[in-house]
Length: 305
Ligand code: SF4
Picture (cartoon, rainbow, N blue to C red):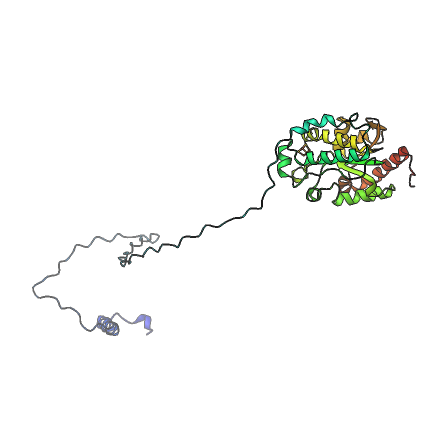
């Protein structure tokens, strides 16, 4: 007979129970008090469950939580106030009423001035520009204004769009990557940078190098015209659509302006692509070189092959 087939023995069950109690360390069991009858509680009828039904698990008794001693409240030491030192901002620039005295700097008012007087007026104009706030956003965002650079009576004046990040930091036009390309173009034309007057339509850097707004170009145009009246270049090269539109006061695009014999106040003028544009579209360098050769021919200079 196998173990699974042994008959049920109650005595053996009681013996095993006593052994387990002894092993659990229980030596005595309470005796029933004589004359005290344990009440027999009615037992609820156990429902008959089908094979598929599972009785719900009875709710487990939640042990009574142990008393938790109160946590003492510790006051954090006060944090000393930090002192933040801000870099000093430039002093706010007062709106310059003298901006509108620019009418005194025009073509006729500069006639008869000596070279020194024109240089002095140009320096005064640069000082006036440095305090200009006509374009509030540009005046607030700029590091410094970027005036033109180059000799008076320059044989050639190059006019670009607006200062970029490098120009804004240095205060000189065309000193970034586009400026290096301009230097190469000028050298190919037989010019040293120092022989050319270089400036932009705007004297302040537009935020994130965005295209200047029309109102900004209009605001700054009197400065550009006054500069040209004092510098008196013999030839002007407009680089980029913004320069073309602003100086020539036209809505025509650069494609319509290139290759034409144009003038500004009697000064011969050519329009070509901006060096920054050539950096993005190098295939336009060939067109620019053709523009430069036409310009040199109009200037009466030797045209490289
Ligand atoms: S861009 Fe020209 S007009 Fe505008 S704030 Fe600068 S200097 Fe003045």
